[in-house]
Length: 218
Image (cartoon, rainbow, N blue to C red; front, side):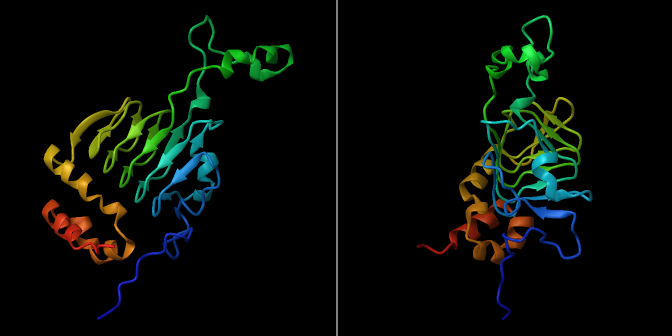
């Protein structure tokens, strides 16, 4: 019997001959970005520049947290809190960043309220050129349609699309979503995931629970 060999989560380019696909965890260096194993970004134009080209206005302290096994299509963008402007006065223009005596008023923009960390769960699929606004939380198993602009939180296994993105449907019933979250296959040991790839990709929730029951007990 052929031995089962898990994929390697430490390589930058997991697909031979496809430099457009990168795993983000071994690539990311910013302490403000956390990415789980096997989450990947696909882009024909330098996907290795993800931190600077796809995570925008990231001046901190808010973090971008992306779970495991997420698929990010070409042109996905995360807008961070640094993009915020004042909206409570006559003008939204950020005068202090232009320097000179205007810089003496930097408190007018440095004290702007943020929306907190942007958090993406596990097993989330982002379509082509979708965009996530600051402080959004996206649940496990969600799908973000191509071109969607996500301004509000997305529930577990929700499918959203449009600008602003709206919930189109849930991928499973509430009961099955609870079962999937309890199984949490993304936290299984890689060897167990490897043995049950077909079940994870195409099996039923019952099948997945049976695979979970076979997990080795430490």
